[in-house]
Length: 289
Image 1: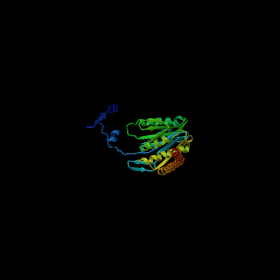
Image 2: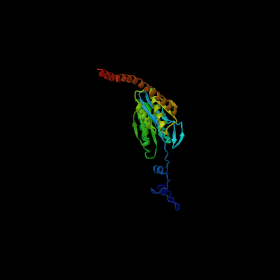
Image 3: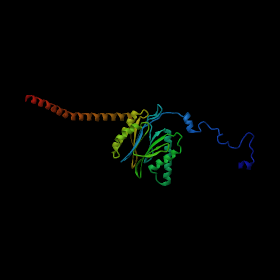
Image 4: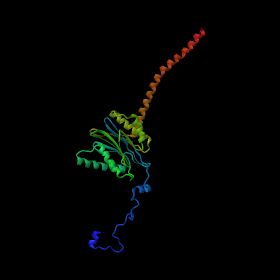
């Protein structure tokens, strides 16, 4: 060491001024996060239902509001759709702490880039930025799955980003333990040329059906709409009430369809009874002859 030689400093007996070699450090048991979490980390089940889809009038984002930790409902009225800026929203699925932290980081980075460049990045640019930030921490048990919903100079845009750096662009995304049930409703009713009321009804129906089937989803249904003028918080409705209303509507439609089928079947049955008499009359005339 140059400073030690200049000052002619001598180490006291029993004290070594040199740094220990690699592998000789005394470190805590959690110095390797993946190994530590696999050995000592909690294995708590968590779930949610979030969805987003793009259509001709913008992007719809919807989610349930139940935050669970295993079998414990931590919060029945949490917010799982997070605003990033005036024209960008993000759905959150995974660990609440990770999602909240990385959205704060994304807001900061987008704000700094807007100050440097004079305009906000596109939705694709925001998704690329978040994907790059998360990819650096691959293997550290981050749990972030999000759908970025926004409107930029190219129109409505929708991207899916996962904590391993995956980035996908599409028209429909649903994330969480209730996503298979939500996809079943979305695949049946989605059209790009839907009207705005139809889009609202489809999103609410998909989340409500998912909360009915998925034990880790529930609470209420939050609905957001991203337009050219910015995002809008549309409504929050109780998921159970929405599901019951949808079931009543479906039952009334089924009853109407059954009534129409019965009314159509009656003339056919009557004509069939008249036709069944013709062979008998023909047989009677044949016997008389």
